Amino acid sequence: METKNKFNKAFKPFSCEGDMITTEIDGWTITARIERDNDTRPDDFDCFDPEQIEAWKNDEWFYCGVVLAVEKNGVTLSKHAASLWGVECNYPGSKNEYLTEVSNELLDEAIEQGKQELNYMIHKLTLDKSLRPDFDYDCDCGYYVCDCCGYPTYPIEIYTDIEGKDICPNCEQGNMLEIKKRLNYVCTYL
Image (tube, rainbow, N blue to C red; front, top):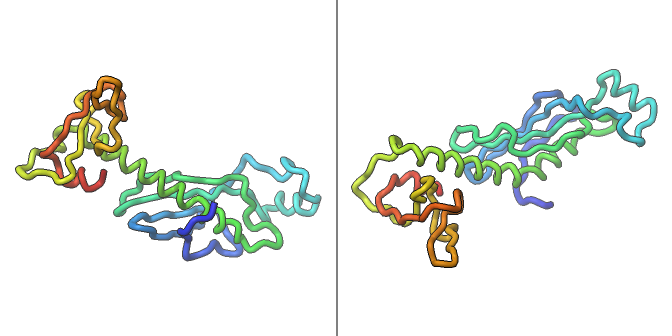
C-alpha cells in the first residue's frame, strides 16, 4: 500500500537495537524504532548460505521488528501502534533501506491506531462526571451521549433500530440523548 506520508530521515546503514527515526504528520508525532527479534532465525528459511548464517551467529546482522509509536500534543497514545517483525537489520550488502521502507508502509496504520487510542481516552474521560463541569454556553456540534454508558458521539455514528430508537454504537443498548451544554474541548476532539 502506497502512503503519501513519509519519514524525512532514514535509518543508518549500520543500525543498532533502539535506533529511531521520527516524523510529524498533521499534528501526530510518529517514531519508528528497531527492536531485536529473538524469535526469528536464518535457519527458519531455506534461502541463506552457510556464510550468511555464520555472519548472523557472529552478530554481524540480526532480525528485528520495526515498531512505530504515536503521540499527539506530547502525549504518547501508543508505544506499539504498528509493527513488522522478522526484518533483517545490517544484512550483508544492504544499507538498511528496507527498515525505512517498512516504517513508511506502517505510517497510516500507526496514525489510525493513534486516533482510536485518542477517542478511547476521550470516551473514558467523559465517563468521569467530575471531569465535566457544566459551562453556561451551548456547544455548536450538538453531539449525543448514551444514557446507559455515557459514550459521546456525533449523530452520524448512531444506529437506529426498527422502532426508530437511536442506539449507542458503543454498548448497543442505551438511548442516545442530544447534548447542548457540554465541555467544549470534548466536542473539538470527537
